[in-house]
Structure formats: C-alpha cells, structure tokens
Length: 140
Image 1: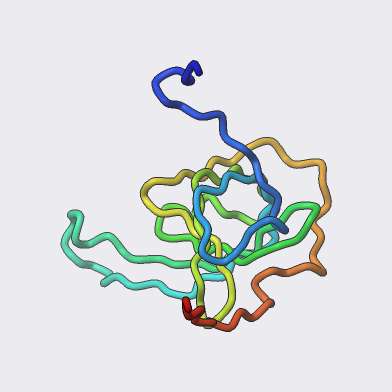
Image 2 (image 1 turned 30 degrees about the vertical axis):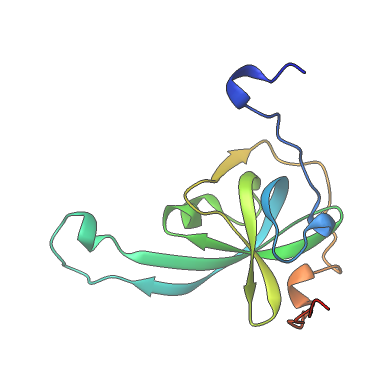
C-alpha cells in the first residue's frame, strides 16, 4: 500500500453534529456566531517581553448546517474568531467543561479564516448544551 507524501493525510472534514466527548483530531469549517471574552489577564504597563503577554480566553459559539458548539479561543485565536467570519479549524479536540463539550485548538492545531460559507448555522442544535455524565465502566 502506497503511503501519502511524507505521511501527510488529506484532512477529513467533519460536521459539528459528529463531535463526541473525548475525541480529537477534528477538522471542520464553521461560522462564528458570537464571541465573548471570559478571561483577560495581564498587567497594563508591564515590561515588554514574552512574560508580559496577556492571557485572553473567549468563548465563541461556532457552527455549521448540522449544529453549533462553544469553541474556547485562546490569546491570538481570539482575534481570528470574529462574529460572522467563517473559519477552518484544523486538528481540534473536544474538552469537557462542567459536563458539556467545548471545542478547542492547542499548539498542534490551526485556525484559518476562509471564504464566507454558504450554509446557515443550525442554532437549535447546540452540542454544548448537552450535559454528559461521567460513567465509570467496570470491566468484569
């Protein structure tokens, strides 16, 4: 079986309604519906340098024609996640926060702003509103 050039796989795009808890490696196209800054840390007037970079976290509601989910944007990601923009999110993972799913991109993933999408977001299927209960499965 021939392998793709240097192990590069063609990304498989998923839809929002296919996202499940505990999964990672998702690539999807989504529209940003809203963005709300939930944390902004950093001292004004602090000395310049890497230690002075403020920490910013925003919760962004993103979605496609199958549903929507909250995306946790960090630092420079916040600038890309503007309402009404369409983004390609690569190598995203599902984080659990208080029993519900959040989509996030760590240092191994990427966010790109792309051409406006032609789909309308299905806002009545918000996956972040579904509460999951942690169930321990005992192996007999």
